[in-house]
Length: 397
Image (cartoon, rainbow, N blue to C red; front, top):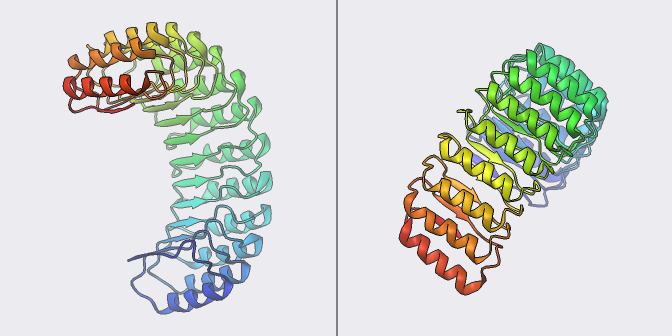
């Protein structure tokens, strides 16, 4: 059975007591120790117990203070433990040394499937050690390195390893310092690797040049399912390249481009690809500088596309004209399940357009029209109209 002891002010002393019970316990499968005050000593006691315990499969030490010494103890446990499959070590002030120890253990360990290292400071040194481990490790499926001060050099090492590794399914590199140079290494790996399914590059420094390189690789890749490129200074030319990639790619189901100023031109390029693409089910375009022309292009795509289920346009400015274009496509489209038009300057007229289109639509399950200056009475009226016309659709006003 799982046990959560999160946010319990458990210190080293408490961790040692828990470790003693882990030595004898035969039923506990998951232990959640998030947000306590466990330091290197407590981690050491828990690690000693893990060398003997044979039932625990999941351990979270997120947001404690185990540091490099605690990570070293955990690494010793991983070298011999054969049952733990999930280990969360985010926010523990672990540096390159701690990451290197864990990486060494991963060369032997066969059972760990998910390792979360986010919000530490492992840097390029830690990334390099983990890359070397990934070359030989055959068990790890998910690696989270978000917010770890990894630069292009560290990414290059990780990507070389991905050319060899055949088990990693998910890699999170959010909030690091990956520039167009690192993107070249990423692109090269995506052309060779045929196992990675999820790649998160949110909040890096890819710019158009880096995103274009990745787009070309996506056109050749046959396994990637989700790609997060949110907040990467991407503009229209990279969006055009991604549109081209979507014409060639048949595996990607989710593309996140939010908070990139791709504009109407970029949105139109992606929309144009959606007329032919039959794989993508989720498209995130929040805060992407899209106006009425971009919405019109997306409307034209939705009139023929049969696979997109989620379209998020929150925080753009499609206005009444954009709403009208989307409304006419909603009368025809049957695949879309969720549409977010929050904060899009629709006004009363635009919101009414969308609402009346729903009587002919039988697929939409959720629509968000909040923040569109329709006033309280307008919101009530539109909500009622949608309830009547499309009873199976939940509306947020």
